[in-house]
Length: 544
Image (cartoon, rainbow, N blue to C red):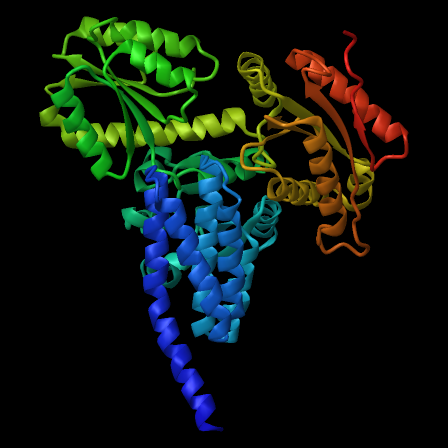
């Protein structure tokens, strides 16, 4: 072995010793990006560019590949929605994994590659057997990397020693007979609160299960086996998706000193605060359709009372699930009753200086619960895309915004051709995994500002804000090509080839309402399918 080889290995070791600091700088940049700092995007792009260039030079092409993908994603100037921030967060997690693989064994490399291929992790605890395997398959189909153990005392004792890269998003305890102690297991996973799993699920057939004790131990939800089959995948994906972006709180408080004090507490707890000194200012923020997780609302405002604003929020379809916490003077029962009638989720009593810990606890738990409710109400359980009702509501608002702003808008309806044959030949579990694959392809090709929804079984919709018919046609063909060139690898005996037919309607040429655009795009889709499938067709322009 030459001195040159030894020297290069020394350089590699020095490089790997520096990489953790670079990863820490990337995490700091992501935190600043979430906080809305103007220079954060450029900082992240520069750091990723440097890492992409150096990785290959030092013999670590995997580091270069992942860093370059993240850099290119940022160069695309995406809008920094919660979903795009989550994509970037996952990319940084992938970087951590490939760095760990570069310093670990071949077994670690294999495990790391599997982590790269999956967005979320689930850990099953329970007796090995057909039922636990069924739960594992359910979660794998939903896109999770699944690990498992038997729940022995020795295995439970090792939980505290897990590294952050091994920490699951969801823990599922499968109780069959008396072979596992769910309370001991839940407690072990709940103790390190700073890195607690986002959801701990208990599946049990026991009707005499001490539910109160289970919840006290840290269990978040309890399912029967039948409920788990119907609801576990949706719940797991919901809680795995939330939590990355910091909670965003709208603070409606006219007392500037109080507002600054409360904001300082919340920001110290890694929350984002938007301050409105009046009800009118709060209405403007809500009308801008800011992404919010909670409203912290003073009862007494200079231009209206907080109860009226709460009622307005509850009547607005866009915000009616948004948690509202009141700040009330004293402990008058009448104020609390009025707050509840106005739609309050909780209330805190002034002077707030005496209730800092309670304030943080209420805001944290209510905002997290609100996110979960919102995800479950607005998202499709399988794909995580907007569900039909939410998507159509967004289309109505997009059309109205385009009308007011005199901008263009394109609407696509996409249908996977002959998809029923996939279900018939391979079963519905394989069909679901194929739908998940197509969803990821669509998300990869679409712009950050495009909205994607699942309209029915294998039918999807896409809203292109400020999109032209010409641009929509280009995107449609890119989507078709991507689906055809990237077939799902689902372990079937024969490869599954998918094709997509697409109908396109444009505002205002094809219609001036959401209903008209939907009808026009659907007619265009029918023509695409009747013309041989795997086609793109545009809606006819409306008569002048």
